[in-house]
Image (spheres, rainbow, N blue to C red):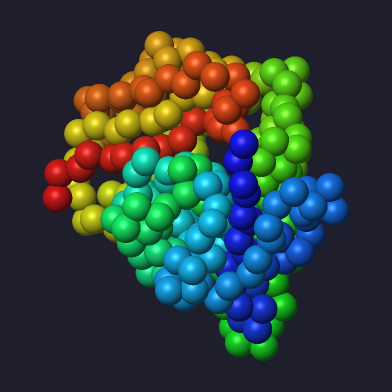
Amino acid sequence: MSNWLVLGVGNMDRGDDGVGRLVVRALPAETQAPCSVQETNGDAAAMLAAFSGYNAVVIVDAVQTGAEPGEIFVWDVSQRALPVGIQCASTHALGVASAIELARALGTLPAKTYVIGIESTQFTPGCRVSPQVFAAVESAVDRIQAIVGFRSFSAQDPFRWQANGAKEPEQMHEMSLITDLLRKMNQVCKENNADRVRGITVQLGPLAHISADHLREHFCEAVHGTPAEGAVLNVVELTDETHPLAQDIVLLSVDVDE
């Protein structure tokens, strides 16, 4: 049985920087009871100490990827590092990324480790969290509940990663997934000054409402005329419908020519 730690990262005195702490404070009592809920400023040493004694952790922090403010990302870092381009995006990225990789090297990283990132834009000292980012708190709480097992999502009630928690019509779902992949891929290219994408690897959940072949077909159409034209899309398919990311497509890696 998993012994969960939910760790909110941030600084409440620097605008959107405090959203990670706001999320963990918003967790309902039934979720907090079986979990340990803690807060930290993102210092790597403090995070390493916090991991001690837990075999599962969810880390919540503000990130900057170029997405719309309030967009929510979920990364499973249990077996691999945060994606390139994300490690230095968060205001605490060096602390979060370093803590994860140092714990991995030391053999103390919890067996289940997830990072929930909330797209943020405003970090002015003395300011409050911006309205768009604050609106994402409820949806981020939903994601934590799904990961730790207190909320499930059926195929008839798909959950999207928008700040207002809205559900997308099924006919828009596939293009939304492709658009999201392209945006993240372009961000990685920008971070690495890359001229061409050779391939990308994604993790496809069994409840993502799209097959691997269909995903590849849409990807090929979408990247025509872009630096990713001709790139290979590698799809790692999950089969467990109870997995916390069963409804998601997760970008695992991008192979680029620099």
